[in-house]
Image (cartoon, rainbow, N blue to C red):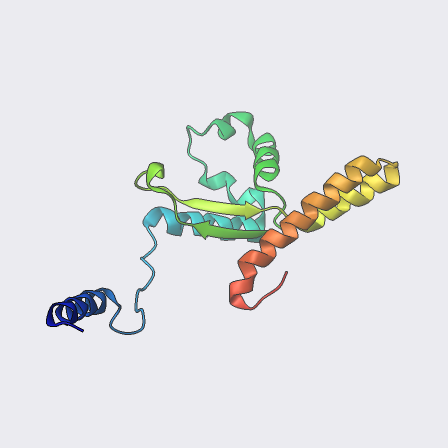
Amino acid sequence: MSRESSGAVALLWCAVAALAPAGPATAEPRPLSAAERHAAELAALYLDQGPAAWWPRLAGACPLRALGRAAALDEIAARAGPPEGALWRLETPGPAAGEGAAVIAALRSAVAGFRRMAGACRAGDLGRARRELAAAERELQRAASLLRPYGLQP
C-alpha cells in the first residue's frame, strides 16, 4: 500500500470513527407537552368513566354543547367507541399539527366487531359477517403490534 493510499485509509477511518456513536444510545424521550398530558388525562377519564367524563370538560362554545347533554354523549360515544376493551395510544403529532397539538389513536374494540359479526351470522348476512370478521381481525393485529414491544398480547 502506498503512503498516499494508507493516508487516505487513515483519513477515512477517522471520518467514520467520528460519525460512529461513542457508546450505547442514551437518547431519552422528549417530555410530554401540556396538550399531550391533557389528552392522556382525557383518554384515561373516558376509558374509566365513558362519554360522561367529557361533558363537563367541553368548552362552552363547543358545537357538541349545542346538542344537549344526552345527544352530545351519544355523539362522543359514537366517535370515541366503547371504552370496554378499547386500546388507545398517545402518538407524536407531526409538524403540520402545529404547536399545542396532541394525537390519541383509538383502536376500536375487536370484541365489538366480533359481536357485529355474530349478529350478521344470526341474520344470515354472510357477506357482512365476513367483512366484520376481517375488520375485527385487523383490529386485533393492530392491537398486537402495539402491545408486542411490551411483551404483551391482546
